[in-house]
Image 1 (cartoon, rainbow, N blue to C red):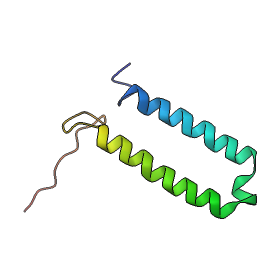
Image 2: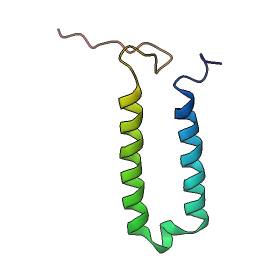
Image 3: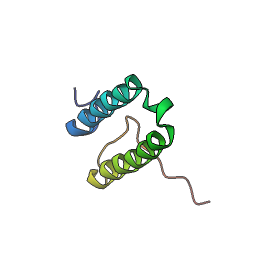
Image 4: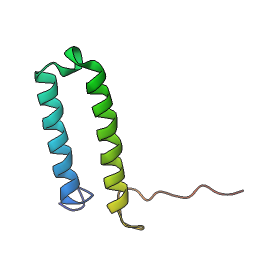
Length: 74
């Protein structure tokens, strides 16, 4: 299963938690009633999640199925 679900277990848990929070926000119609607050919270949350994932991924750790090739400098 590690070859199918790349990344750490808590990364997948984070995706599930975020999906649940977005569902709750949609269910409460926050994107309609409090649009500005919703967008600001969404942007800040996105930055935090991206930073968490990138800071905890070690250099050389496999994060994609296919290897990422460096572009030629020629």
